[in-house]
Length: 119
Image (cartoon, rainbow, N blue to C red):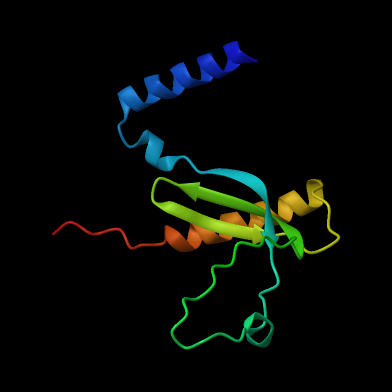
């Protein structure tokens, strides 16, 4: 596995040496769990204190209210697409194909700039 990574990296460097814009044409992606939390209500966070007393610092951690799978794609300019999986959905070939269709649409939208004509 390590040897394959070395060979792939060497090939990418060689392609970059031939064409400096080569790396700008690469899009990559990754999946990650995104945890979300319930915000504490204003009423619940209120406390009685003297007007001159300093505010109490809050150091309590709260458990995650849930999590959702996010697939993120980016290129050299930044994030292209963040796709959140619907609750209860598993990543299978159909779901991944749908995500790739969304990515293709987004890339087409980003690269449809008119080509300048020469005078």
